[in-house]
Image (cartoon, rainbow, N blue to C red; front, side, top):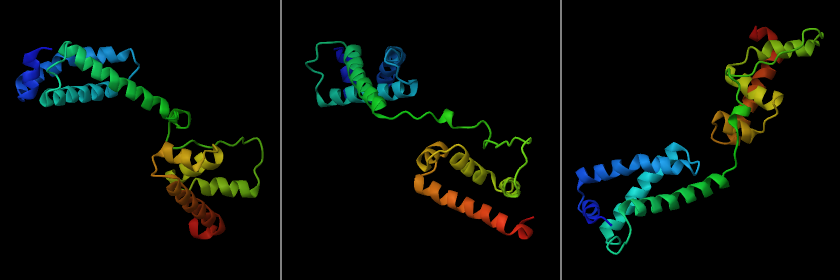
Length: 185
């Protein structure tokens, strides 16, 4: 291994460390693309690999290494890429785009050719008086049939209990609007 690289890492030669870091960065990003790693993750992995090789230099582990600096750095990086791939595969994929409307909420349209019942007319009228967040919550839950967990993930709520509580408040508001029409119009 290039001894002047090891010495730079060991002795905190910031000028040379910046040069070394920059020399291999883009090449590593290109190398990692064949593993289908997101670029942001590739950058993180490179940073982590560089820090690991620096720790090895400081601790003296690089004295008997019989390969180039680049080979050793990319070897650490490849190991970290494999760990990231394992992490990717262990995560369940959830496509938010399938459930996300372009607008703040998905408008419910009703075929005007059919006559609505009095209850349906009331529901449509008072639903429009709810705030956007309540309209979105009730639309996702009752119209699109998403679970509380799915809504929490989609809308960024802390957990499904928050969704349940919000949905309950929205339903209560809607019921009050319908029960007390004179106070609300």
